[in-house]
Length: 157
Image (cartoon, rainbow, N blue to C red; front, top):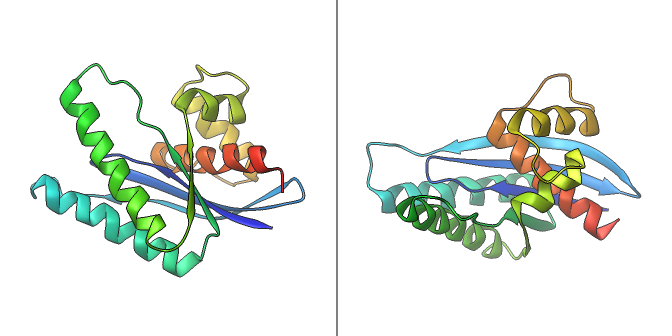
């Protein structure tokens, strides 16, 4: 069995989702978001991401991490901030001894929706169906769960 944390990094909202993968079965553990304080400095917000994910990892004890890669944003400043947020997330999980696996947005969407250009609502719906959830998780949490599902498909535990 593998307990996988999927992370959808963002400088304002970072989504996380944890699933258990065992012999082709996926079981939902927890999901949520880390919202940073928008009136604080960017450095402070990066620390909020680090501390938030550190706490999630210590409480739920995943065995491996999967993180969405930075996509090429039209605004270079946004891409740099996203890269910093992703770095804070990666360091948080690695400080807890987890291996990190990277997946492109296209690969993640293909893993859950069968189509690399799937929209946010499609991803939310498919995550809900694949994990048997009674309701749709928030878009950021659904994206993070999709990252975890993508990794589960790759390792086929």
